[in-house]
Image 1 (cartoon, rainbow, N blue to C red):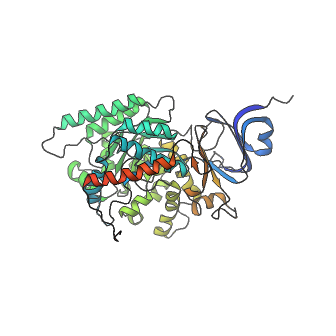
Image 2: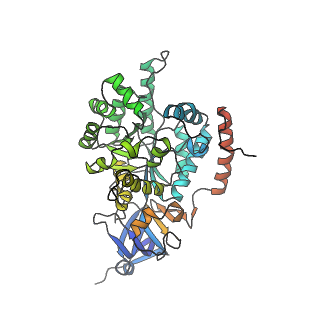
Image 3: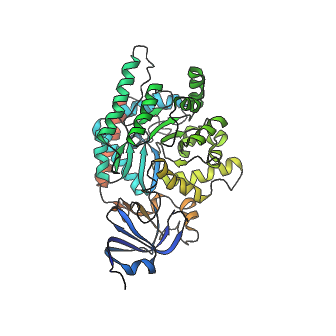
Length: 462
């Protein structure tokens, strides 16, 4: 006896599906059914479609469907409203402390909220459905309020650094304040129940956090079932500081503190040695590679970076965009290409591995592997339709290769997060794009003027 048809909210029928499921199936003429926030059916169209009664049917023959991308390191405040203002040719210290930090600190809460919405819009329009914030939010409440309107999924945290570099500061007071901030944000924005936006202990890292702060962040993450993220070793100055002040290299010191593990995500890690790599692999610590930031900042990633060795050693490599335009598809092509050239080995990081870094690996690092990162029945309906009727996609020959090497975020036609269509026909459905762009332009001028920093464009504007 034939079963009664299953009612579903949305049926996408006829698309090519890049599933990232355990078999890594690519399904031609496929179908995906969504009910509520979940994928409830997936497979060949002729097998799936007859048993379904959809409220909305989408002709998918024009599209390649992929899981939503996961941006594992992105600054959603600061850079989105000041991007392009910081001059090139700065060393690491001058870039961060002379330019970037004052620009962050010049934002009002309303401007941080606006910045977060602009970043969310940019990510959604490029197929990013989930992100991990880099830890430089000043007013977390304003940012979360703005993000919730966007419909994006993310893990965020307030700016936390506690080391007393000024002799006038009381170290105990700074550390106590930092730990209270970490616990307060976890209580206000808990991850229990899988909300779209939740808090993590997001440390600045480098040399800015004391041992006590690191241990507290790790203990809170363990207690609340979340992760910790921090910057480390993009430049040699981190290694030099840790050797001078602890007698150990950065990752060695974190291991001695007992904070390495499968709920820690460390960003950059360009300047590490073989011993540090082994500690990362043994502990299950996740590593976030931001290739565009490494190129812009001249970190030396292609000269000394050990990212191919990390992958070979079983370290979970994720991708982030850092302060750049948050199109993770641009990061995929860099991740796939940089070490091919640096090592003169075309077998390093093939396209399918770069795509895995941007999907499943990101989900794993964010402790969401059972929820997102692949197109599978029972997982969250976080998915992207890439438009085939574009010159980078025609003729369609090898979808994974073309996704990484030919396409970028401009070909993203539609996006669902948690079963909700947040991008439809290249337009965001949750935010007023025109109003947001106008507000961002006005805010950018106010912020840069407020800092008193000079404009250093290489050519005059008249």
